[in-house]
Length: 121
Image (cartoon, rainbow, N blue to C red; front, top):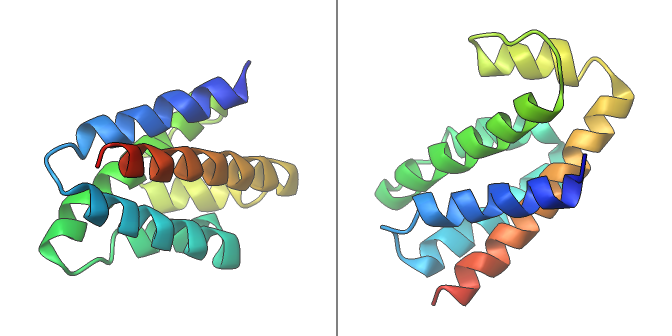
């Protein structure tokens, strides 16, 4: 499986689904999310995306969250749980190799999405 291709496709989905928002707002939230991911990990990243309070970020955050998890669930053949936080804890964070792979994949995806948002300006 080509992970870079998956990151590319997912970043394109994020940019497409956030097309109704200003590019600068999308780019800003993606940049902040990438920082949280790099400093605090994937669990903190999902919490961050779902705790946004501004109107624009309330629309953009769930899209990013949904697309990252959809990509992860496509690639990681583990039991699917209805609760995203439980899924991350039980299936991803409990396996160090899978955790590192997921973090790297999300970083690549968010980097592509950030450039995509900037290019949309």
